[in-house]
Image (tube, rainbow, N blue to C red):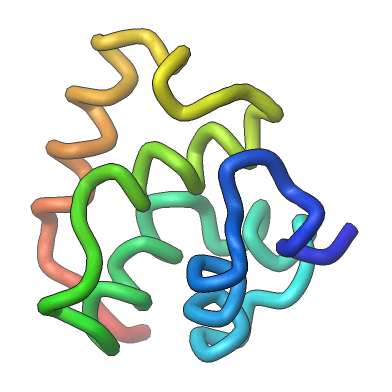
Length: 87
C-alpha cells in the first residue's frame, strides 16, 4: 500500500515521506513512526510538528491520530526527543 493511501496521510505528508525514502506502508513499518518523523523533521525542521508524529503512528495503526491514547502520545513525544543517530 502506498503512503498516499494510509489514514492521516495527505498530499504534503506523503511527499515528505517520499522525500525521506518512505514510499509504502511496509517502508513506514520498517522505520517506524518515530524514525520517519525524525527523518522528516531533519529535512524540514521549521515545517513539522508533533501532529505529524501522531499522524504517522495513527497511519500504522489504521486509526485517526486524535484517537491515539494519551499515554501513547506521551511515549511518542519522549521517543522523538531522543537524538537522531545514523548507523
